[in-house]
Length: 375
Ligand code: SF4
Ligand code: FES
Image 1 (tube, rainbow, N blue to C red):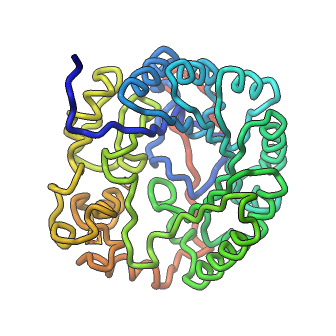
Image 2 (image 1 turned 60 degrees about the horizontal axis):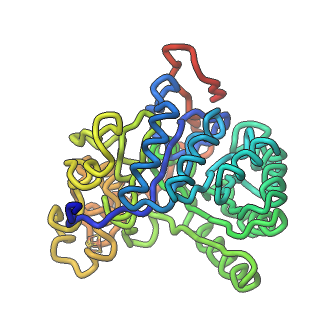
């Protein structure tokens, strides 16, 4: 008889198959230290990850990156997940999605596609993506609909596209999306580096939220609109990842397993590797997954707060980014002693503004010369 664990199983997994990507979005949440292609897990290792994930309870895997279509073995990974009973969603820029590739992926059991779009017009979208990709995305959306797979759009929102959120929603409807996720930028990785250029104004956010509300009524029952709330403006901490080590895990391209995709930079946590440990051990026993699990680690206002089981003290990565201590209350919360840090950023002048230099993601060179990075 198997051992009964006190730790509830995960149900979702973010599989970052590669950090390589031909686009250059300055809002990217990938870590600034991108993982080179010659350090990526191989096909057999990803197949085992899918099998192990299913065995511990994962039912849904987001196949992401970077651009997952850059992995020539993507079909084999999808097939392994399908055999193990894990639903797969491809999270893609659309670059590299041909009719043949999509047919192969669908036959292997791919469940749905989430396509990233940067803005409502080719000129604006291409400016943000750092290249002429809009037409590719439009073709990719049509292919997904022709293949009769569920299509979602994912739009990261910031000061350069919030004012056209209505047009972006119309675009989603005209491309046949079932769902449009409007995700206000989360400031990790490259997005954190470019924060001054990306932060919107409070007015922009208010107008965009009203627009989304109106469209939600107009499209009720036809298209789902998700509004991922911005972090810096309302004094409320988000229940990041549904809690640390509570429902989801992230597997990095090099096999490290993290409780969230922002955790790469957190110091003092040795993130375990799927090549050295089973996913079950990593999930249930590793120090990294237990560091901020539950509420026992909390101090400060979170420890005695009525919302601690609802928002889990907010985001550990944001607490670290802003205070240097991942164990502090998320400064996004108005009860945090560090809340003034967020207020100063949200309301302050941003001298960098649109004029400052933008940092575009760059891949480190692979030691073996393997890989096709365009960024
Ligand atoms: Fe949430 Fe902590 Fe703020 Fe309470 S003090 S609302 S638990 S972040
Ligand atoms: Fe890491 Fe929120 S992104 S805990």
